Length: 415
Image 1: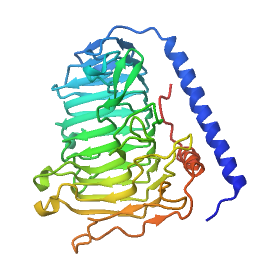
Image 2 (image 1 turned 135 degrees about the horizontal axis):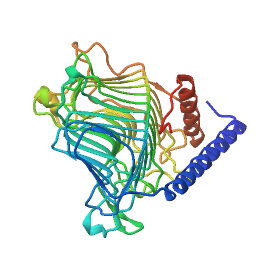
Image 3 (image 1 turned 180 degrees about the horizontal axis):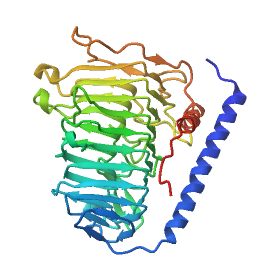
Image 4 (image 1 turned 90 degrees about the vertical axis):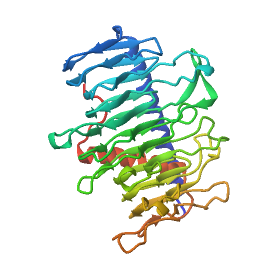
């Protein structure tokens, strides 16, 4: 449908104001951060509630290290680091982080050191994680490897109501610079080998990545991870804007919005499985909006996936590819580990401006499950016809703000 010029102009104006508001917020945040007096890095060896302002200027030392399996709550805190912000490995951490702000500092090393901004939270061999109402600025996101908890007593992973700006995997190339080519694949949230977890949830998060200031792979990635048949991992009501290579006008790129099933599974039990993504808004994430490339019993439905294929300055995104897809990347169907993967009820507008003003590539379903054992398939997905504009992308942010108000949800720190 051809848009009214006045409406388009008004939407562009709103987008400009939204950008200005984000800039003002960032500047105010930077000013507030500058006034904080930071303490030296801390190592937590006992359970309890911890609040403070901690900083590490050593890329090899986390600002906060959790070295206990007892329940630890970090709240109402400010954390910044040239390395990891909060890290725990091999101690079966039981960690809650809430109402806190994390800022990644440039590691300040040559590109040959291959050092990226630090993770906000990095957990390995852990038993419980709740990350709620935090703000992440310039970090490498959050990484969760090997869930060792007991779901029968409430152990799980909850990533709720966080606000993130510029998830960044670029290698540092000096005190204030980043490499134009070197990077590590990072995500807002990655589950890696998180198996058979119940009640896990990633919801009501706002993730905004700006071109040229970030380098995320997928914003959310489920790598050989699984829920259960009765309690799938649910990823819902998130707003994801932006996923770009370092130089989005020229570089190739394999990332995007949500990678719902990822990683080769040699057996049914080892594959990505029982994952659900619904009611998310995914905007301008280049290579893909939502993808399933591995696993079984995974579903994406009722999402809005929109991209004009254009950068803010009007240049085309070189890696602009497809809105949503299901593809057996590893040939796992032959191993009987790829099945029951479906996408339905999604609204997609995914432009291909390099081809023509109205060209789109909304769906690609070479391996959507159409077998008798699957009660659903890749049906009832809707394409928004016509030219996909930057104004349409801006309207999605307005839609997100209205959704937060209607649902009475506050994102980011409440303090």
